[in-house]
Length: 212
Image (cartoon, rainbow, N blue to C red; front, side, top):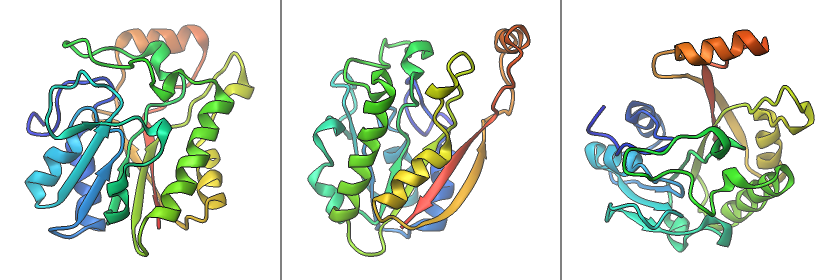
């Protein structure tokens, strides 16, 4: 919906955020989005009466409600006040195939999508641990992610359960794993052709991990 978010690489439907807010927050709650470049989360929070602090590493975003912050340095101080963390990070290697929005914004230098596998997973391991020590009791983390399947180098694949394992190691209690279909559950004709040529199955869902 045009009300929710700006055109930006990795932008998700605002309705997905709205569902999370409806079931896991109440009006007036504080929501933190540490990688909110599209501005979708603050837009939905404004619509639903939640307070939101959104951050992004990209300093070219022309939205006053998205604060410049590099998550490689750790969580923003305001995370301590969070009732809900909505985290939709760039997928592993997505920068290799990701597109820029019409304004040229997308996977900039500093994007975790450009990290090597070990560095990428270690990034999440550290951020999960840090967040758990910062937040108050009862804070929810809603973590949106998809499998990354590398058919040429299967050892480079990263699955949802890899992230869940890192969460559990950081003492988060995982309470739900919700499948979230893509907006249309369809893929472009060029993508279909690619999958036919490579004999790969296409993934039409992502997973929303709820932890507390």
